[in-house]
Length: 489
Image: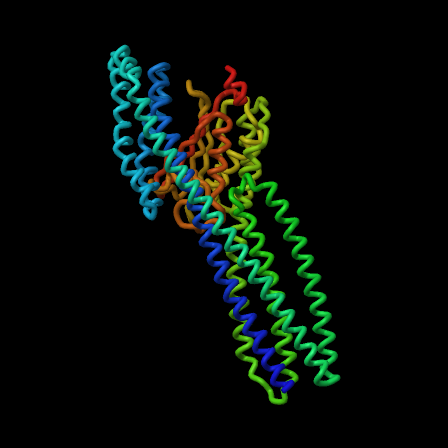
């Protein structure tokens, strides 16, 4: 009867481990899907905000051009107008599962189609009818159109915010069940082990040694659980301090999954060791191949989980790095741009030599700006130029600069593999990369560059011919002015 009970307990423990493994893997997969939906909502909110910005730019650039005759505003007007169709198409594609959003887009599209009418005032102005152009603007029809569009977009953002709240709650609920099932499984296994110890003590004195080892193992397991729990609590406290940067607890589920995956590995090793010890007490030898196969499958599943966690961790760390840079205070100083770029080129000399490339720095106009921000901007651009050179072709990277009415223009030109036309706007977006993914990177460098250039009051653009090279054009003010002082002026 005792041997039968021990066998039953062994089978029960094995079954519990199997159920825990399957349930945990399913919950981890479900958690990934939940987080993808959360990320989907966040990105969609960003696209809607981008569309609002473009619409406001159309109106603002038109008025600014009529007031100042600055060609830069006319260019901004046309650029924003050209980007709107692609953005609304992307929003429509991403909301195909949401009838209310599709209905809002159906109402929005005819309004957006009227935006090119803003050119009428510009054309009148350029044709010499300045009074007529200003009169056309003062009718207020343009502002009414912008207000209608903005109202619809605000409603769409509200809908996405609601969905984001629901999806975040679902993600947290999945995490709760993952933790609950893992802990319940651990407690159940400990209880089964305790019963087994009692049966061992009743059967023979020889098994008392095993009972002591199990008791010791249990104590060690409790200590590990306590230690891991303390580590997780500390990590969670740190995460909460940065929660406003990494929105809606994206980091917390990642840390929880990582910790409890390690716990599953510890439990796996302990359980299989106990099963092996139990098999050693059986009168007839047992086939251990099934145990080894299950142990290998379990390890493969946990390895997949760890790989996915590591990738997500790198992406979140990239976001945190970008956010920290965004909070740094800029300090204005007079900078010799030629010396600055020569120093950066010197630090990349080894990399250039490995790529059989030459970096040429021309005479660059000086400026008053933040030194560290400029170093990061041009280090990223030169590094990218070297990274994406064509194999087997001597690399040429050239930096030039000139002063214009709009400010200072710096160009980084290369003869690399270039960028496909459909990817030219995307390469400045976070986590977006162009072409074959055969170079290391997370898709954050150019997004960081654009953010820094904008903080410095400038702009960045890119022209490229696939197979022949690219040129990145950075326009900066001669003297950087802090935003609060700029507003006061």
